[in-house]
Structure formats: C-alpha cells, structure tokens
Length: 208
Image 1 (tube, rainbow, N blue to C red):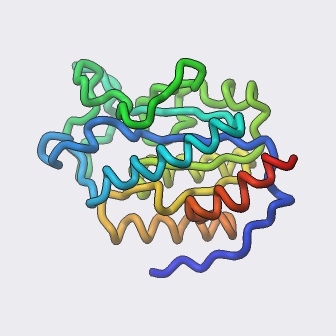
Image 2 (cartoon, rainbow, N blue to C red; image 1 turned 90 degrees about the vertical axis):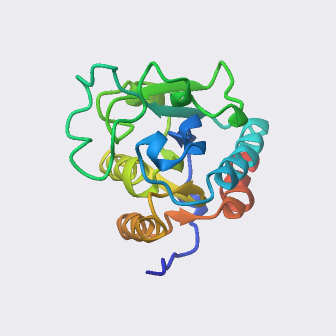
C-alpha cells in the first residue's frame, strides 16, 4: 500500500527530539539467532541513521536511544512469545546492546524497556520533559512493532511525531509498508525521508 503524505508544515515543529528505537547489535544476526523476524537492509538503515545523527549532533538537537531487553528468567517477557517472536533481547547477551556504529554519546540518554512501546513502563516522559520536547522524530526497529506502537503512544500524548521511512526497518516489507500507512493515517505528513528531515525539519532548528 502506497503512503500518500502531505507537505511538512514547518510551523508545527518545535521542541524537537530524535528517538532511536532498538537498533541493537542483534540486527546483524540471523532470524533464528535473534528470535525476531527482520526484513533485509539492516546495515543500510544503520548507515543512514548514523548520517542523520551526525547532522543532529552538529545542530545540538537532543537524541534519545532505546533498547529492548529482558531478564534471563523471562519474568518480564509477558505475552511477547505468543506470536511470531521467540526469546530475544536477553540482558546477558552482548548482542542486545545498541549497535556500535551509531556512536551513542554519554550525554545521549539510553532508555531500557521491557515492552514494545518506548513509553510503557519507562522514564522516557521524564527525559522528554527535561528536553522540553513537543515534536519527535522516530527511527529504528521494528517499523510494525516497537516503532508503530511508540508512534501511537506519542500521538496519544500529543507529540507531533515523524517517522523516517528510510531509517526504520520492519519484520517484513509488507508489514513495514502497512505500518507506515497506519502512522500516516494518525498524523498527516508523519512519514518523511532522511533527506526531508535534513532539508526541512532540521532547517527550522538551524534558523530558529
């Protein structure tokens, strides 16, 4: 399903924060090792995300990273194993950590989460208030799971929210495309490219 977007309204953009969702080292593993299905192109998504982060850092735009992790005894896994996913993102597994290529800095917050949404049971809202956030840009994985559910919660918490379609990756191409369409349905103009972020959204921050 093709996503139809409207032109970005730069007057809507203020208090901008980038949120990098679950781009973890296990993205390089095979599905059977990772426990989660993943469409191709993880390395390319990481590369484009890194480029976007470099521009954001030059403009002093706040960046927040999130990572999903679970206890070895699975007390916190809930119903995540009811569907297509196997055991994944264990605290004891070094592949659960954020991928090194993104170069997270010490002053960039890391939110550890036990559920799909970045808002559920985390201190993200406290961090966003500290940054005086009103607009969010979402990047990461999976488009149809953690990114989508996080977008919905951001929307319901009244953030103007964007998702960068070439910096997110889904469980499959079909699920990826459907999730982008669902997010665009909630906020027209939400689905953007990394080029649009740099040329339009970041430009507002630079001159603002």
